[in-house]
Structures are given as structure tokens and as C-alpha cells.
Image (tube, rainbow, N blue to C red; front, side, top):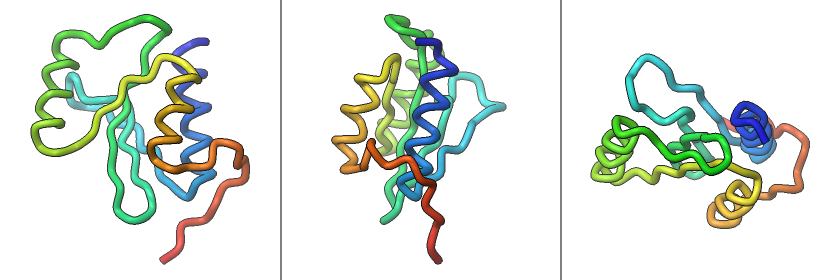
Length: 102
């Protein structure tokens, strides 16, 4: 599966669980997405092609984020998405976008 396909699938599933999947750009090495979920949960996700690893600068930035107390995930296939959603207690089967509540 292409990196972009995996990323779009992930984004759709996050939004169907009332979350935000924000594309991050403009900072070398920053993960691809900032994930904001209900109840103040914040994560970073780096998407890679199947079997590819983060570059040296990405590993450095991931380490800095982890040292600040954030979780950083590297996802390269749908199986890893399923594992992450299980860890976050999210519904992977839901396909309808949920509106954020105030």
C-alpha cells in the first residue's frame, strides 16, 4: 500500500472517531500528522512506505518529542493502524464522520 493511501485511510478513520488529523509541514523531521482526540489525547504519527524506516533527522525529532512526553508512532501498513486504534480504544469499523462537540 502506498504511503499516501495509508495516510488517507488513517485520516478518515481518525475523523470518524471525532478526532483531528492535522498535516504538519514547515519543520524538518517533524512527523507527518498531529492527532488530536477527545479527552485531550495528543499523538504524532509518521507515515512510511511498507518496510521503510524514518530518516536520521526524523528519528532525532521523534526522540525530542518523546522526551517532552508525547507518543510518536511510525505507521507503514494497515495492520499497524489497527494496533494503534486498539491502543487508543478507537472504533476502526466506524465510517461516519463525527462532529466535534463544544
